[in-house]
Image (cartoon, rainbow, N blue to C red; front, side, top):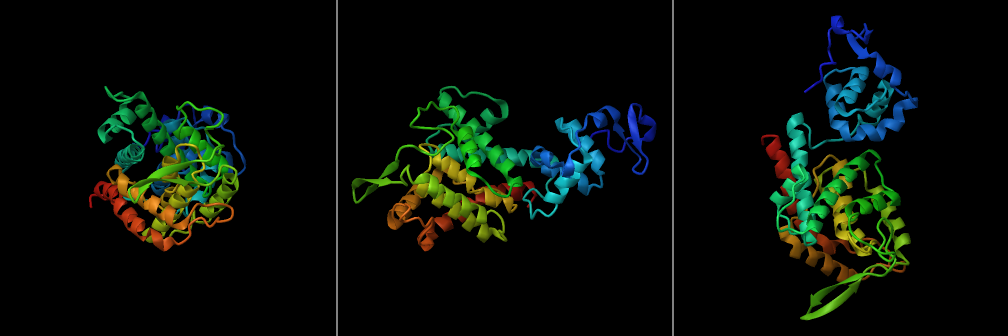
Amino acid sequence: MMSAVIGRRLENCNNYIIDKSKKSCYNVRVMIKKVVTKGGKPFQSKLSPYEVEVMDLKANGISLRAIAEEMRIRHGLVISHNAVASFLRTHGARRRNFLDGISESRRTELLKAIRAVWTHDSTAIEGNMLSLGDTMAVLEYGLTVKGKPLKDHQDVVAHAKGVDFVRSLLDKGRISAEDVFALHRIVVSDETRDIYKPVGSWKREDNGTYGAEGGRSVYMPYATADETPELMRDWIKAFNSRFSGIADDQSATEAYLFAHVSFVRIHPFFDGNGRIARLLANLPVLYAGFPPIVVPSEARLDYIRELWDYQRAVGVISLANRELLPEPTRLDSLRRLIRDWWRTTLDLVAEAKGK
């Protein structure tokens, strides 16, 4: 609900200055404390989490000064109207948003639901034992579930923070290695490590995984630790080139598929690679205005098998074999699954819109 300061009558302007052209009034103390900077650029990241709110206020004809004041009242942000103007110029041309047409209160609940489903399924794929209901209780109320490991609670809280961090990156339109490191620190922050298992930097030891083929156990290596930094430079460059320019759900699927599978081939961290891949791969999807693609936990075996079969078919990635996603037609089965899995969040959005 819009705060009382907006549209306040002139006779109620004690301790406020009056903008006669807008017939509005603003707190003198707040105006004095404001730090006005060129273009308001330092405040872009502060306003990013509240983009929907800022856009709604602007759409309702609220002045830039009043929007700045509203952000102070709602969220404690001390910003200038110039910062709001700069933010609107940067974000005004943003494409579709899956939250369009949904009331503000319903948007909040929808985002919570999506975050909970995304967190539950992604952590459950890695063996987390909390149910979706448990996950919602932990995230919404900070509760602990009797009989469930403490680590499972920590993992869902960390992943939910990872979702929030990914959303904060949307304003940048690209990522850096430091962003990837920061996300890794968030997602695996509560786990005990040693110098050979670093959090927030590339792996220092080679890694791989076992799978079954022809009734026997087979080891499949990922990229070597020595070659990972250069391969990740390739990955980040390719990822950023696909960050924007998504025109429809088909191109969004392709961007997700490319980012997800190529990241998993490298496996740049000693742990947390699956969770990080499923978070980062959704950045271009979210940026294009779609809800995230969530791999359901009940599809875990199909998901792992698709990744295994593809990687075994195309070989281990290396500097000598550095194409990030060779033979993409081999991924047609996974591509179809991804489009089916997407229905979870698409249906949540449709329900919120009353469709």
